[in-house]
Image (cartoon, rainbow over all chains, first blue to last red; front, side, top):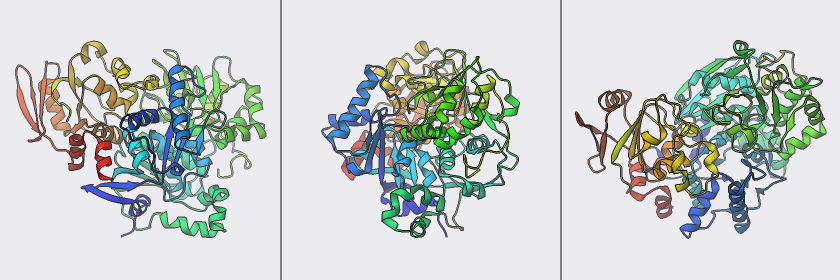
Length: 436
Length: 174
């Protein structure tokens, strides 16, 4: 019997089987940010166990509240910073070099096919886009990961979603994943891995695949995974060329983590997206999804474009194409947070920042920002935000606020219209988005 | 081992998420005790009064998919800071459930039929609960009714509860 991607990764990482289907696996990387890591650091210090299993396998960033907004967040940054220095963690990204964790770590080449990764952040599932097993965990799991380089998981049971058809213009990875969450429900993949496959995934860029995998947890999944292929190799090439010499050799190695054709799945869902229209959420759960067309004209107060879901350069290119020569409506405010300094730099070089500023956008530094209402862009009671983020829970962006999740294209079109607006369905220019 | 007995708070809703259990703006707190006043501050549930309803409660009984959303262990910490170490639900989001056991706390799953029965018999009344970890039986009682409900958790989860959490377990095993 063949194996799924997650089963193949587990096969080479299991170090113990304490009971039933519980497996303790060896970790290839432990990612850390300043919100969930200080609790682990302090506890290790208090227990007299202030050690790290391998400083080269720990990557850390200050991203949620940066620059610090008050004494408490300054202290969180200080604890992480001092700990990284103390343990000689070289891959620590501080102010000026920092970006949203799930955007900056892949960009630095830290995520490879076949890796096992944990982080104290539920959207760690993003990294499954590379054919890795990457899962969000709590602070205690993170603490054990830091100290021992291991974590316990149920043996992976996988739902395969075979995505077929051809996307219509104006429809993006975000629309695809919203349609899938709507279909599965917020609890539909709990204790399951979701493997995203099929011709639509095959044609997607790594950035689009990250958008898809990023929201797997919104259906309850442990991890979202794509089989590694030549697109994965191309994305990683600058980091792996010395190791492999040729792309074919890299593909050969990484293909061992691709799912077998006869792998056994919990279930297989065929999802034809040919007729899929732009999607958005309308309530306080990410599975409450409608066609944007049904919501057109809905009042909004703020537009937020950024986050680990949709703050990458391809997203900003789509937004710029729509905003070019237009002004943000007087009735709304629009905030864009490029997800990393590299995204920011590219956006500058490509002239996107000028388009945004000419349109009247507020550009912030790379940060998680408004997504979880911890620092900037917080909503007032009764306000509504059109957002490219991943979570619309009650109070998420500020007490009494409402967040509608959508693609960067729909968010940009809505910013100009001053209300929910379906993006124009003209094809995205080739040079802006090679994959769609 | 922690204490899994006491007065019950009934939360009659599915999909109660971690942002409702502890809003993100309080994640700037470093100490776990500091989370105590903010538990369930943003809970969307008709008639719920945070101050009155949480007073003296040691157990939560709720519906489907409790703890969905963020990985924040601040959710179990905020429960713990309020003296709540046991949550009973139809099922839990994976990370939340793991976090509970990782903290040596208890997350017990009953079928929707049993949860429905418990709500019918006890919700809205002053209800006490006792957990017998040896016999693996939960006893729920009000003035009018008393009933025993056998429960099961995996051997691994039990080992975590007995060890006082995953760090102690992992440190002695790996």
